[in-house]
Image (cartoon, rainbow, N blue to C red; front, side, top):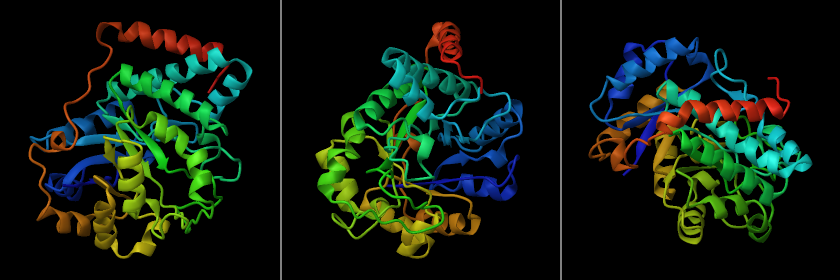
Length: 336
């Protein structure tokens, strides 16, 4: 059982978009900056997507804060998570409170436009050697990353937004950007287990989803983590006890292409343990994977067959919760 998560071309649904979203193998959509013009525009697009199918589609976005914030105009400018880590270094209590507040603010704004999930938090360690991770990470110390990420997730959950931790088992040990190049981390499993896996280990029972990296760790397996049953089944599921969904990173990224053509990539990711495969920014690849999966995928009841009912939020106390969270952000000195 597996599904495909795709993107759309522009700021409105085209007939091609609608056809892909109607495919039974499609379980959701992810938005990028190019899809966003205004809050009302994106709400209209999401409403139209919801009306396409009787079974629910998962509506997702990469809304981390900092440089990875797809919706900006009319949304709060969320600081990069390294800013939270810097606050924690100066005043631990303030850092903890701020991280939870950011989850509330970011999540409440997504909830208001009917988004289900953000691909956050980043659980990678900031060793200051990776431009693609860098200030997206909370901190260098795995204990601090774990603490602050947990608070951020709690803030998201308070307002009804699901969280996906990434990039398992850790992208912070290399300088390569898997969007554009192959990436190999030569460290031993013992080293990775001692530090990089710590946030995933502690948070595995609270995360709704995990996204593995397109990084190869040859000490454990010759396959990139996203295509490795050793990492996804033996380590993530068995050793760490993770029970949520595993989302592949985008299978159109350069580091994934070493595995083979699009359909082979998707099949190998599923065989390794991915529940949902992302195919983005490559409509021909998406068509090929949807066509291949459409004949065999079995998702009785759509997304709930994979996950469960839609989350509920803070209810009547939401406005006061958001207001107090914004006050914490103001006191932290962030001006966006």
